[in-house]
Length: 170
Image (cartoon, rainbow, N blue to C red; front, side):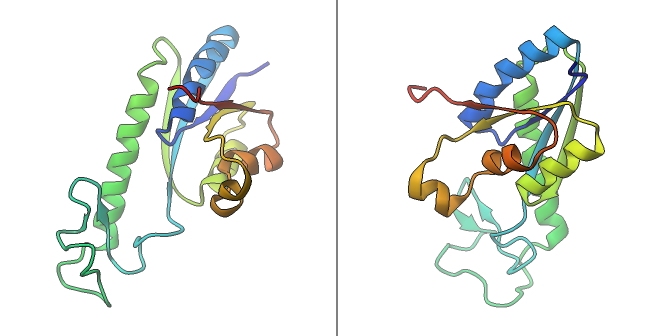
């Protein structure tokens, strides 16, 4: 019934909660799990200002957040450096996600773009039978302002979609 299961992950607690369901479904149906992380290229400095926020020191490529960038500076990272760093971070998230999927046939992928669009495209191109993904559980204005990747995937995907919300106590 389900030969190919897509498990999009963003490293959130919702994604972590979905991993347990992915593992159970894949084991029950002897399915291949496609673990996907989409690097969201819609915002931030990727390709626009050359600025890249480093989580460790909260600075943009060695500059204080107040300095920022106006135009292109010679010490600003180029888009290839930014893409490499984002891809490396995405691969770390995928590695953490697959840690709980021992004994399951896995395929991993990192895509760049708008998350819901890339999830849908990947599902179509890889003949996915089921999508299992976490949700942040946002409601009201927060969901309206931030959008919901899982909601868009549920509405637009051809295969069935299972969403898993993280336990609020975790």
